[in-house]
Length: 100
Image 1 (spheres, rainbow, N blue to C red):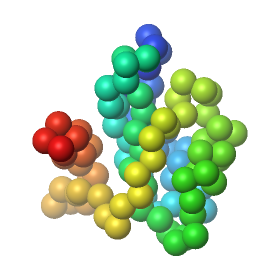
Image 2: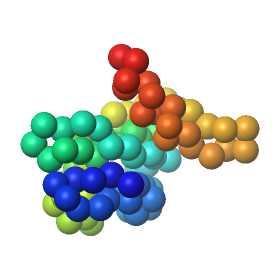
Image 3: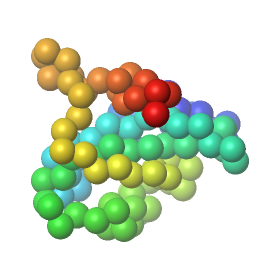
Image 4: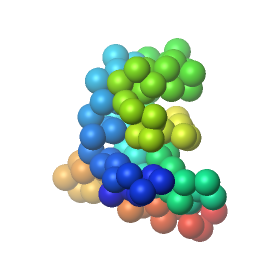
């Protein structure tokens, strides 16, 4: 769960909406520190459509999600870390940011 300005944001809900975009192959979201709201939503996306832009995805999220659930950051990747059975490992994405 991500706590944005006192509101509970569930990553599965955000990922479900974003996965509905025709240009998205797969996605994962995590909470990152934010000085204004405590935490902010960061979205990792693997593109299905190479032409998909940050702005297009932000506009899509703006239409589909309430303001506090909308991702503040979007990072495009070639692949996401997965377990042996194919589950996306959000913890690895979170831990990656602590090391960097």
